[in-house]
Length: 68
Image (tube, rainbow, N blue to C red):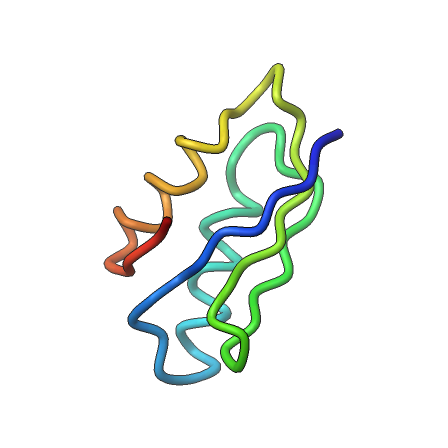
């Protein structure tokens, strides 16, 4: 398992947090995702053999948020 922190822009409420959490945990290879509105970031534990960090960023962007 690897851990990464992804900066997330465009979140304005807990609904955004739930949306991003659901998108990330729905990806194969993601063990956990903790999204913080206050810190504007997502902390993700994932299996790099199943999913890449770029795919995590892409999933957040596809959900309508900025990610880096």
